[in-house]
Image (tube, rainbow, N blue to C red; front, side):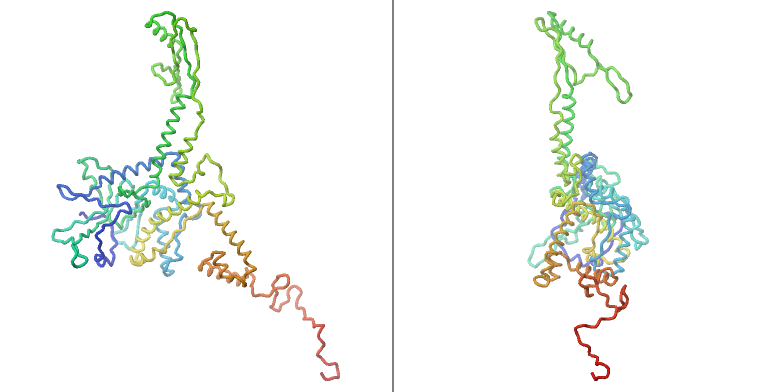
Length: 550
């Protein structure tokens, strides 16, 4: 195999991993399979089948995105997932649960900021997420300085999904090399395939067709796995091993909506206008002369003036036949003579229930609530009990999209940390489980739901306050009623203590008077100055009168 383009990050434990073998090759859970075939000339990479299907699928997805109804639904999803603000960034990294020092956290935050700057994510976040959502896959080439790889990624270049393929092929074995291994004694040898994984870049995407282009799949540039960032939608056709987009479920619904709309337009154009029927009295004329007389009358009264919208001219187009022509019928002697009658146009032309049904079906297939169709009512910011279940499902759907899209940041961040020696690959496997990304939130329905839940918890806490110290403890109330976690309890306690020291909150240990006001015990008398203590009138004086012993 030819040398791969790009860079590879070598693992220190590569030698150890060779002892971990399995007779089952890597599956296609990410839409990548082994495309290896054999013929008279030997082995070659067969991309014809899968490449053709992926090429056609991506083109179909992009055509679907141009349809107005489908574009509106896509924009609803993208606007909900990526919230842009003038001052704030759409996504930030959260390292609160990361088991690392503050220095490592600071370096990881700086590298994430560098990645966003390379992507220009604050400005192009909407376009990047939309491309990933429509195509179902996203490719970026991580360009580094080969002479100074420790400087990290220098540029991130977007690669069209039509020009890139992720490939796993089985490595070729030498005849002298034993490809069979025995795991246990007295066991038949089992074949353990070794898989080579790389990316195939084809600058001119033309899917193979016929024997002449059979080897066109191999005419490209092979990239190493580590030099390409590959993020998919997570949807895979298990039968074909092809990555699908979230628009795939809406293909049938969109085609049905298109056909219904086209048929409705044709029906209205043909049935909407009223047409006339001319009964021409031909008397006792022979058949040939009667037909000739009918044609003469038809041409005499026929008006075929047409308005050309492009030029603004009115011209005569008698040579063209229209489907809106009037009817001319002959009538023999004995009839009622020449007569003109009118055929009514189509009825119930204002019926749009079928169009609305397929619009709702399209929105349901895309996971967008039906209430967001433009023809429906306005936006309601009332109680959360009035929120439809579809909005909650949509909020969870957007959360899953964000989590899947974050894999792009994780891959780029891993490359940066390994190239700059911030951590090793073994350390990264531990750290990556605790790295989270916080997206700006703009879902008003979820916000209303959280508000109502908080109101309910505070109400229960107020009802349980008389029973504190008798049936319930404060810790039980905070954990079970207010649903506070251990981290939140520690954080809130620290904040309360700090605010008491600053004087923002009153000290609960300070004595208060009968009105609940804190009593000053500093010795300084307040507004009235130092007032001496009054003697107790009920007690007798202990001081003896003058001249007597006490």
